[in-house]
Figure 1 (tube, rainbow, N blue to C red):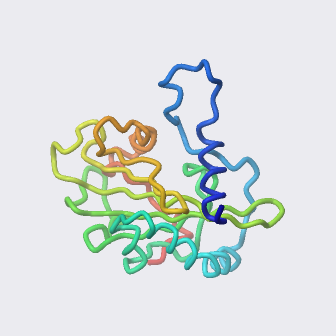
Figure 2 (spheres, rainbow, N blue to C red):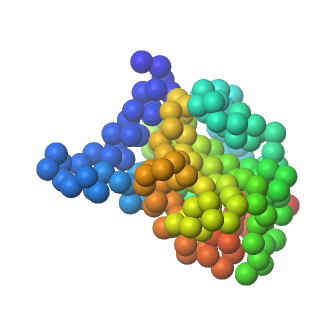
Figure 3 (cartoon, rainbow, N blue to C red):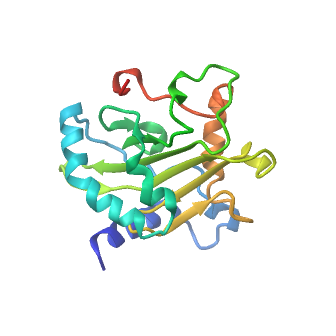
Length: 203
């Protein structure tokens, strides 16, 4: 089994471990699997880890065949260093915006992003023992009105480090990404988008 496949398998088992008798609905994740004691890194340390890891991460995501997974590193990186995100299970994240998504950090309350705006967040984990593991790629895309009323027409996709698809909210009957929009509802006033902490914004 490859390194990336192993990490992907561990993450999936941790995220979906339930007792055999539990109802089927319990198999749907309610939140990201959390890293209990995440290591804190300085911006320089986080960038060094990311620089060493990104080629392997990008190659893994690209195996999915998803066009965003193949192209996102050519987009605008909105943060100046990876930052720890409690909302994504205490993983280090980077935020990339396609051309239609650029400028979202200046989005005012009540304003909407244009159809076609896409955001991609790659992630990694650093353990207390300083072991480094690639994480999932999180994708959020603004689709046309009426495409998916359940998610206010936002599409959520999660791709594992080995390129396997964990979920896609626009796939018929796929509830595995429901928890993404449930969380993003807290940012409804800014079109369901959370903002990068100011200290980590690239501009």
